[in-house]
Amino acid sequence: MSAQHPILIAIVGGGIAGMSLARIIAQEVHATSSSSGSCYPFSITIFDRDLSPSDPVQRPQGGQLDLHADSGQLAIKAAGIWDCFTRKAHYDAQGWRVDDCNGQMAAQVTEEEGKARDKPEIGRGHLRRLLTQDVETVDNVQVRWGQKVVNIVSHAAGFQIVVGGHEETPDSKVLFDLVVGADGTWSRTRELVSAPDPVYSGMTIVETNISPATESQQTSAMVGKGSYMAVAFNKALMAQRNADGGIRVYIALTVPETWATASGLDWSDPTITKETILNRFFTQWSDSVKNVVRDSKSSEMRLWPLYDTLKPTEGGRWRTNLGATLLGDAAHVMPPWTGRGANMAMLDALGLGKKMGQALSGAEEFDVQQGKAEVLESLRKSMREYEETMWLRMEKEKDENRQSHHLLFGEDSPKSFHDMMKQQALPQA
Ligand SMILES: Cc1cc2nc3c(=O)[nH]c(=O)nc-3n(C[C@H](O)[C@H](O)[C@H](O)COP(=O)(O)OP(=O)(O)OC[C@H]3O[C@@H](n4cnc5c(N)ncnc54)[C@H](O)[C@@H]3O)c2cc1C
Image 1 (cartoon, rainbow, N blue to C red):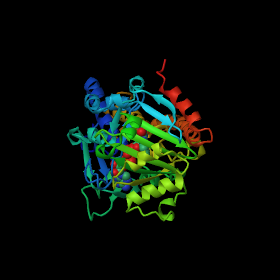
Image 2 (cartoon, helix red, strand yellow; image 1 turned 135 degrees about the vertical axis):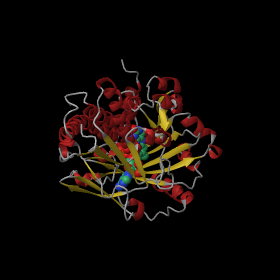
Image 3 (cartoon, rainbow, N blue to C red; image 1 turned 90 degrees about the vertical axis):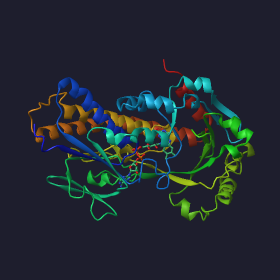
Image 4 (tube, rainbow, N blue to C red; image 1 turned 180 degrees about the vertical axis):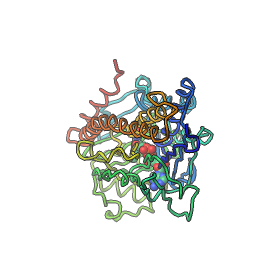
């Protein structure tokens, strides 16, 4: 075993996907090497542009995510943080209500019925903190916060990670053997593997929030502890209870990609801008629905133009076998209409992390006497296998996402959509 030449793995992006991957590799190596008694030396370096795990100024973390039993929850277990997760998760926040534009209820899943869905909600910030907490005490893992990757140069001997805004970093001269791009929608790693950029989906979300102090009784009754949505005419108003007791509001609009600037709206004046949006887009909607937005006295507003990568069969694949791959939104960002982006990111991390951990610890055909080249080949094989499985899964996932978009914003909405949601909410046999 060549202990002098450890395998160096770079993960670009320490979000949900990147942090899950690092933890799962480390857990898998620990679990399998304790029975096989062997492990090839390795080191994982995570680069993230955020200054710290909870850097709200650079990048607000957003609202609640529901983690599903067949994906996100499996990854949480494999990452070794299940107990911490169950302490932070909201099992009573799984109820939801869908109205039409008159505020007439079209469908509802009560809080009690919601519990049977086993999709507990957790604040995105809490999830990130759970994943990052103590990560640097995990063997072989280190995080470089505040380091924005601007380029990745491929050399014959490995990959050079170029970080912006720094003359020299501890890693600027290091060549990494493998690179995983978990750097979200605008991934810099995508170029390295020649993956196409995402395309605009046709919709933009305007996000704001309601503090408990300004929440009306009517809004309170509509949202409860879970989620509320009113949908019609190619647009939606959505509201979701936060872990801190406030409500996050999403206004989803069918608008051109350049709308934020072309609309002439003054984003520095949230009160007027919110009312202008209601007047321009929601004239036919009842006040009971519009008041959800009016309850928001917050100055916080955020724009989320929604993007979609091509499906694997549409050309969304990339060059394989380079020792570099993509994970999570970097691999397959999609609009949140199925609420599964984070769950898919975590399922990617689970699939790839288990395989890489096994390759490093010799659980499969790896022989501890082999050299670095053989272990690297085994790791590249892990990446290829992960990519094939993930592409198959994402082909179906993206079809469902586009179907949801159609049901949600098509002519029959909200009836068509609530039929589908009702179906999904039924306990699985
Ligand atoms: C409005 C909205 C609501 C959503 N709701 C849900 C939901 O209910 N359920 C669900 O499952 N999914 C939901 N999603 C999708 C979910 O948020 C994403 O799929 C998930 O965050 C993807 O995780 P990720 O780790 O791949 O990417 P990200 O969470 O984007 O993390 C990427 C990380 O990379 C870092 N980074 C980026 N570029 C660089 C760089 N150049 N150098 C260094 N670091 C870099 C970032 O700082 C970040 O930490 C929603 C998305 C939106 C927009």
